[in-house]
Image (tube, rainbow, N blue to C red; front, side, top):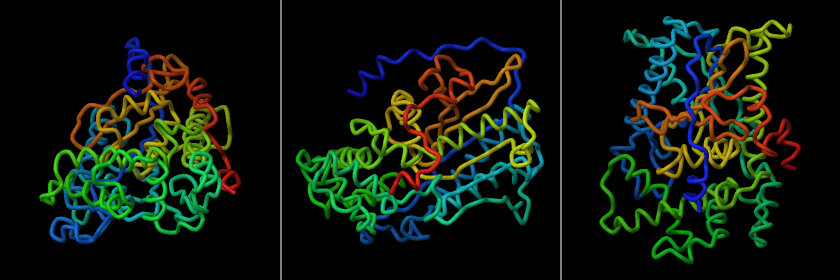
Length: 382
């Protein structure tokens, strides 16, 4: 079904080469670097994953630093957009209050501004808020009964979501509701399903895999994991604008509002600009589910193009939203870099609702995305 949708999308159109253009503002959202699995301890490689379950690996730290180097090449070396020596007022980096995301934010900042190997490294400010009150990046399912009500429309016996305090219990319940286990040859029980995260982490880290974990089971694990993930997020075959709104509605509204505010301030048409006037690079260090939901909210076509063929955001996946002044008017350009190893980023703008070319009018982008935005998810989640 998804490949049919891909074929029906408009081809990315080549925008004219504009001579009169200026980069005004950049928003960047990235997934943290490679981590250890969150699953069974007996599948936890104590040598490779020496910082503990769920934490960054050495490769994760290095690749995230290299993401910062990539961003420096783009916005400091090539575009001369950011200052070559860090100007803290130009940057605002926000992270969800999760170790691997906080460490990734710091690593990206080091990659952007520690090129000369300064010792000690130049510190980079990272902003965060308590996860329980972070409705932009850190929604917790147990804080949002409305998500449980949406699940119950598909799965009538879904339990009271506020009682699922363990992610494993929450994930197992959503897996059950997909009925995916009926088509599984191995991952067909809660206990076996909960091995998937640790097994995938082992594979992605290049670690030794259990002998019984055949290529066929690796494919099955990927499919089972994605099925449950799609159900949780209201994406793909389970597309649900209400769930998308609860999960990333405030983030999407924040992104669009900041673009409009930055443009108005850059043109001198508003007085209240002290909060954003000096900022040129606004970043969010986050998790795969946030990027997955955001891409779906921007348009199913955008998510499919971005995630083909991986199917989900990989470690160090990056979304860039650039605000340009072209011939005196505001335009938005959206790009996606799939992982730590790709130099080129894919232009996603043509696949955003209402946008058709590489650059999209700020007004058009600001009105996109249907019923997936909110300014008060806390109230809507009740």
